[in-house]
Image (cartoon, rainbow, N blue to C red; front, side, top):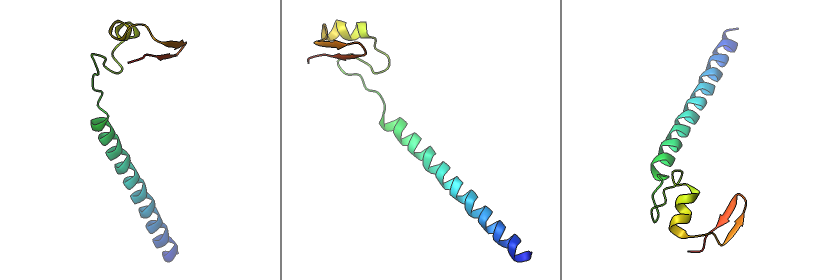
Amino acid sequence: MLILTTLNERYTMLVFQSYRIRFLVCVAITVIAYTVGDSKPWRGIVPLRSTRVDVERLLGAPSMDHGDTVVYET
């Protein structure tokens, strides 16, 4: 019984350490992605903020328009 309890405690500690390491890796990847993936404006177009009207005003009419997919010649 003592051996089984000791093995169970070791296994529990290993599992929690594994989850702790995974959690810390996920947090680190999220922080790195947030700092590196910062949206930078291009010719006055800001990702996730500019509307289609703003883009058409700057680049003109699209060369191809397939509903959700629009192509502009630059």
